[in-house]
Image (tube, rainbow, N blue to C red; front, top):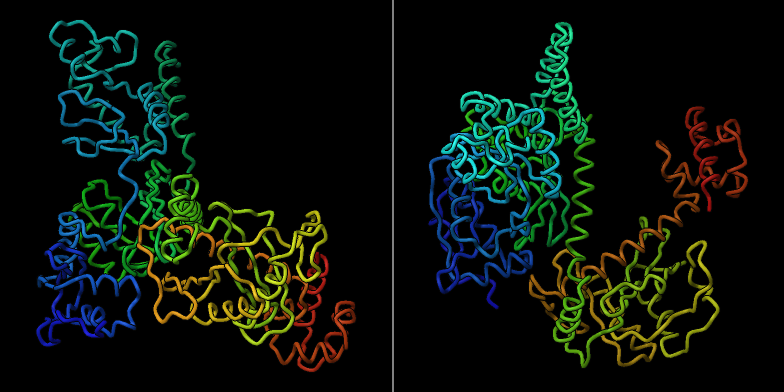
Length: 631
């Protein structure tokens, strides 16, 4: 493959103005749309030497056959044009959203003569005012049921409304007290419109005003001994309290904001969008995103905000994000023009906002895990994943048992390894193993040692006694050394790790076992002795399976490594502020043993040169805490 793309324009041809660019394939299909403040500077990144590009970026530029650009007057214009072209062309290499707009909303049909409140998934009703989204349909119905007790607006269908207005007989929902529109013959169109305005004002955060007003009216009616009216006001207050009770106050009572929590990895992301009105969460939307090309966190925030507000008229005063996009000022101006008032994009850094951002990010992390494991929970998808993996690696049969290995350490100390096992595409946690590595030169040597220890038992029958070189998880019963022979070994890493694993297979004499490695940065699969990686298709079931194996091996290795850290005195001391390597060595040399150092008081520790009273107290307290926490 040539290192220079044939369609690369000369540098002088590309303007330095802001604009929008499009990559097209040989058939003229738009592959990718992007914007830039400086087109020449941005496009030069795509035409760098191919070996330096991210794998997915390299795949995009080599698939393309041409690039074109459009210069615009301002950065805001480029943002608007980029959004319009993404919606028009749906480029395959731009981020892909997986939510399918399936969330239920509460909508008030303001374009109708007598607006009604409905539950809908259609976001294109002319003139409608939307609230939500809600996680479940029943949550919308519950909210509406409580709201119409306090603000009795129309709920009947358009046909029922027309029939009632023509005949002068109340609609059926009105007869049973479920509709408060003019068709129920209890109010005029003007009075009903005022109730609709109050309904919307309350949903937008005006709850305190209505609570105060209804409380005042209830007391006045009670003082005038109009107990029937007072009871009606009391019931409305109860309904309002019930609605407010469903959503706790998370920010200041007068704050309207949208908050976006984002969790991402190399290929996917999950977004939790919290809609906050009057300080309360009025709606939540979860969105899964597939990243078809390499983008940074701020770039992803940019895309998420464009998606969220491109066609939405409900833009709040403040938008809280985990990181500011590079064109935050242009986004604010774009949103201000759409809203008609000032909009601020800010990072949630402290206080209630930061706490809510942590909650949203935690929810996004869990959603990302569900998104990545969704396919493997389905039998058909698992079967397809194993078949795809067999084809990609050139295996004779599908790998029904796969073992994945990862190395973890802390600056070269506490080196451990993990082995996780998947059978038929599902994890077998009872067969996970963790390894302690006492002496090693680097990660490749560690990988070689671990696999030699594993492969020494690959053809032996399972034994009832545990291997003393393998650390069992506390509280578990003794398990066999290893179970069945794997069809495939996966190592976390690229060519060096795969070469070390291949050497272990060769030196152990194990045959009939396939081997590959997954390089995290580029999500590419390396085979022994190959100069180029295997690139699995972006939507491949096999890629999801291999990623899940790699992530599980990494998680299990980190868990074991952290467990060992609590027993390592050097690691404990390194966590004390102001205590560097030289002072740690001086402490251990002065006391001669870990036991004596743990038994020493602050005055004895202070005798070591360079250790003052305050630092001695901190060391003594930290060692006492570590002794209590020791397994």
